[in-house]
Length: 340
Image (cartoon, rainbow, N blue to C red):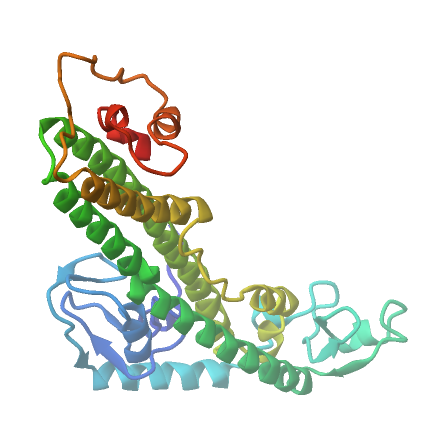
């Protein structure tokens, strides 16, 4: 079995498993694993206990950060050794075709090239600048995109905390339920059966609204996950040398431009209409009860049969009214589910 490279082992031990760069202000958490303070803080941002280690998944009820000065010194020394060793010996910054250092950047092809490539027919008439100059230019663009992504992430975080305003609609359904209970308590057993029917319909609407809200929150969390991945990838770019930094730079910029905050849909027009229908039903039940007070609401129970459960509720509502809008005695015996 081939022996492991001691230098690579040292670099691995001095690197954060989240950002994959050398430790910056390293801290040890509850399980003993080490991370950059900024990386683990961002990883646990917005989460509640228990807190899980990103590496071993061991959990703890509190955030425990123990500074590690020794590990910080090791990371600093390792970084200095890597810089001293130079980057030209590494495979990623050598031209695969000419085995020359990638010291130039072709603006037309958006990729690092070597001096031999610059003199070739393929790049002879292209605009070429040193990689340091190109890296500085793109770093400014990346920095602007990174700031925009963080602002977008804050919007998603705030949207998730507020629950996409679900309390407004759920509170309204609860209030409508109380109104239904109060109105139907004034009626006899026949009306109580109708009360149960309406409450069942309202419960179904409550579940529908809750399901819409949960889907919206899940969508927000999914978009935040995409943003976190893109932010992590862009921040990792700043730890790389210029020539590696420019690799695949256009894809990252395009991904950045595509990530824009899309406010989740609060509630569908159909659910809002159904909710408004319940408010109108309550008004109709209240007015009907007031008109029927002091009169025989049910009349003679032997003179008419109970309405069929399969009867069209809308047809009952139309037939149970006179042209003046008053409810006749015969209509008082009809199924109150006509309100639905």
